[in-house]
Amino acid sequence: MKKKVCGVLFLAVMGVLSGCGNEKSLLNPDDPVSITIWHYYNGTQQAAFDTLIEEFNNTVGNKRGIYVQSYSQGSVSDLEAAVRDSINEKVGASEMPDMFSAYSDTAYEFEQKGALANLSEYLDESALDRYIPSYIDEGCIAEDGSLRIFPVAKSTEIMMMNKTDWELFAEATGASLANLKTIEGVADTAAAYYEWTDSLTPDVPNDGKAFYGRDAMANYFIIGMKQLGVEIFEADKGRVTFNLPEDSIRRIWENYYVPTVKGYFGAYGSFRSDDVKTGELIAYTGSTTSAIYFPSMVEDESENYDIEYTIMAAPIFDGGEQYAVQQGAGMVVTKSDKKHEYAAVEFLKWFTEPENNLRFSCVSGYMPVLEDANTTEVLDKVIAEQGIEVAEKTYDCITYVFDNMKDGKYYTNKSFQNGSAARKVLEYHLFDKAAADRQEVVRALSEGMSLEEASAPYTTEEAFQEWYVDFCAALNDMMGQ
Image (cartoon, rainbow, N blue to C red; front, side, top):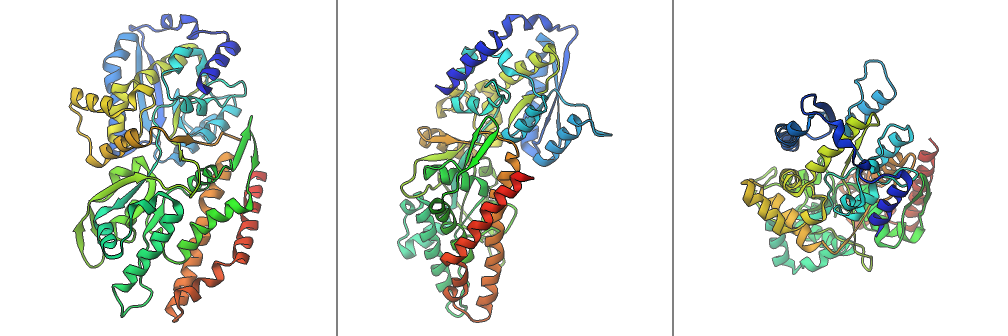
């Protein structure tokens, strides 16, 4: 419903219907328009993206007079810095590209500078209706409700686990996968896993292993609070209200910070899939795009051995609503002239057709953005017709989402000024404190304390209150900056 309302608003505000149907005359195959794209894809994702661009240039682009060139800017932060330098005309900066990848908070920043094209002028309601409604809604960041972010690939979170080591633990203790459906159940299971692994070496006290970790702490806050009925960032027309009820924030703290300082949860490498590879964790919550990086072998200090994997829905808070994160950058088109803007949109429409978008999904782990592309049947058809080789873990992850999470609710907060800064507070404030306090607990353990004695100062109501006040102040201070 939101998508259709948004589409109607586009037409009412802009007074157009598919750009009035006149844009095709702007293109000339004998004098093709050149379109540049900046993105943050690297490795196999970049290779897949470049292959699709080459195909477009040799087929549809050649026929219609559109030539696309893409350039990776490195990481997401590198890309954002490059775009800011171009917009601000910094000395030595490259000329603005015709399109670039952008998350909603960053796109909102650039929209406020008047740098983004109004994509509503090139898409009628029938075109919009093909896309998943929440993806279109996320891109409607302009004050008049018109579209600025074109969805090209999305992801959500899943839970992946080392099935091999889980089965050893489950056989020995009776642990059940059913307990992993809730965040509280994961915390309880992690405590049992720590105790079990500690018991395997009775001569070495307090050497239990962490069970679980998560990537993207900001998602834990945003989606966790939404599951509990609270929109932590309530944004309206670029202005935000922070909703930080103490009881809900306490549940966030109790089910991440407390298990972390006790050693039940952990974070050691750059990503939690790295921690599974080194044997320091056996389960984590992360993006669907992480599936391809889930290891096939544990390589720890004492031995190497093969492992199998299990994919599950990311756990939710007990009694909470079934919300999952909606994430992934879209493409924005730089405001320029009708010819370049129209050509850019035509490429994006081609890229998001199922037979093209799913080819990118098979390599990247991103989910396609059209309604009719999000089924296992369509995926299998594209794989068979085009002879695509897809990694088993990526295929299993994508089809798990198609088949098991299609009725779930996906959520991402609306954009607001300084949204990226506020998200960084969610990402690092509790994570950094938990990591630092865990080190203090480890030090106390090395001095002969029991785990309960060592962790006791960090798990009291007073400890929570001190952190809670500091957390709320950090959010407000960041927004003030």
